[in-house]
Every structure is written in structure tokens, then in C-alpha cells.
Length: 383
Image (cartoon, rainbow, N blue to C red; front, top):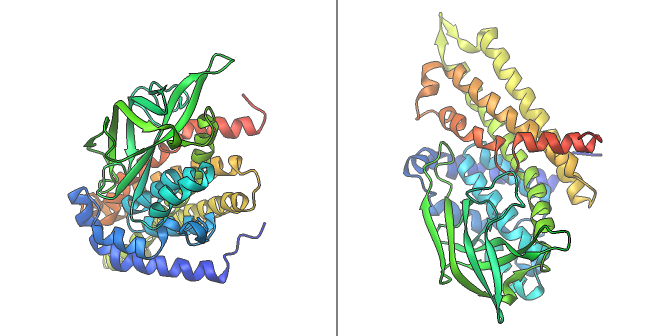
């Protein structure tokens, strides 16, 4: 399989890299300290069409492929993971399910503003008492005439509390299947719907500028027409959504790995010890070389998974491998990047300190490392 980028993709990568370095980078530390994204960044991302990258032009998108979306996410993550995860969640979790499973009417009503970046969507799956057991939902939706009545709580949801947050797709139990398991259906709930309340922002270890909140539904009523996809198909649909998201998170982790290489290379050339740049010492140079190996390998892994996704081929195994390797590589590289910087790596004004805080969640979100290993083992006929 040829993983070489097209000339158009390579040019696009350069454009996003320039945006990341010139617009995002100078604001990254301030956004991290404030715990909020600068609206200027979101506005320019919308103007560049980043929120509509993988969607067709007829629904307001850019007509690109999933690989191109992941290129953008990687380049942003080289500088700031909070911005990168905002794009990943808005497109992969917020808008993609509407594109994949929505009706033509839902495309026009909901997808267009999401693709334009005028609104951001959220994906309401995780619950306070759940996590890796994604099917064990407590949120319920019952029919009352031509309306769904939703009750429950969602946890750790991205992009639901921003000024431009437009909707959340809620996974809820809507009945019981013949085999006794939950019937799960996905339902679109617009921001501002009575009975839908957005909780306070979490105090997180990393991703400070990314919006992450609890969502509460108390007798929240929406029309049955807001059902996304077929009733009872919610579990299969959100598992596919998570599978795609693993490729994007692998790209994000790769970007963080590359950011560690960039920052350490720059610092090692400038910082002197014992009368010479620390880059001259193998103990430092080898650490940076290992970081480059991880970034290179992680990039090959996510690009192969994305290429299979774009080609319409099964990609679940490759997505799990890419996500597992890239996320663990990001954690290792961030730790080593702090070590290369010495005491300064422990200071917040140096980007590697933020990288260190941001990396850990990559081993958790979109499926933990343990779940990835289960999926890979199953693909080998084990377990």
C-alpha cells in the first residue's frame, strides 16, 4: 500500500503547519493557563475549512479524505494538543456520525453549520459509572407521542460547553433487545433544549484549553425526528465512530511525538554544558533519536490505518495498533523531552511541560491501551 502523500496533501500539511506555528503556537501557553481556547484560533480554523474537511461540498464540506483530516490534527498537535483534540472531537465525534447515519434533512439542518465551524458538535457516550464498558448505559430515552424524553448523565464530554456548541448526540437505552441486552439509540439534542444542562468544566491534568464537561438530562424532550440512524443501531454506530476516532487520536499522538522532537532538537542545540551544546552528548542525542523513531513509526501506523479507511477496507485492527503504539510513544517521548530539558522541562513556560501533561490521556480516550490490546489479540484469534 502506497503511503506517500499526494502533492495536494503535502501542500495542505504545510498550510496547517504554518497556521499552527504562527497563530496557535504564540497563544498556546496563554490558552493553557486560561483554560479556554482563543476565539481567534477557532475562527481561523473555521475560515480554513478544517471543520468540514472530510465532508462533501454539497453539505458544506471541503471534499477531502480522512487522511487529510488526520494530517491537520497531527500538525496542530505538534504545537498544542488542546486545539488538536477540539478539531478531532468536533469532526470525528460531533459531525461524522451525522454524516454517516443522518438523513438528508439532518445533513442540511445539523451538518452544514458543523462543517462550516459555525457550531461544534459533541458525542454523548461516556457516563459517570461507565468507561470501557460502553454498552452499559444508564441514560434512558422513552417515547411520549412524537417525542423522546431523555434522562441521565454523561461524563467527560468534549466541546459541549463552548459558545459555539450546537448539539450533542446522546447514546441512550430505548428498550430491550430479544437477546436481553439493551437497545441503544443515538439522539440529537440541540444546545439550549429544556431539560439539557451543561455542567461545570473539569479541572484536568492536561488539555486545559479543551472544553470537557458533564452533561445532565432531566426530562429532556426532543422530536423523534432527531433520532440519528435507525432505532436500536446506536451501539454499532458509535463503535464505528470510535474506531475511526482511534486513527485520528493516533495522528494527534504522532503530532505530540514530533513536537517533542522539535522542541528538544532546538533546545539541545542552544543549551550548553561543560563548554559545548548538550546535543554533542550521546546521552541527549540518543534520547532525541529515539523520539524521532517513535514519531516516524507512529506516523506510518496511522497513515496505513487511514489509507484503509479511505479505501473502504476493514481498518479496525490497524486503527487499534496505531492508537496503542502512538499513544504510548507520546507518553514516553514527553517524559524524555522533559528529561532533556532538565529543570527547565519542569517549568510551564517550556512547551514540553505541557506536552508531558497532555500525553497521558492519549492512553485512555477513544479506548484505553488495555482495550486496544484486547482488540489486537482478538484479531489474532486470541481471547
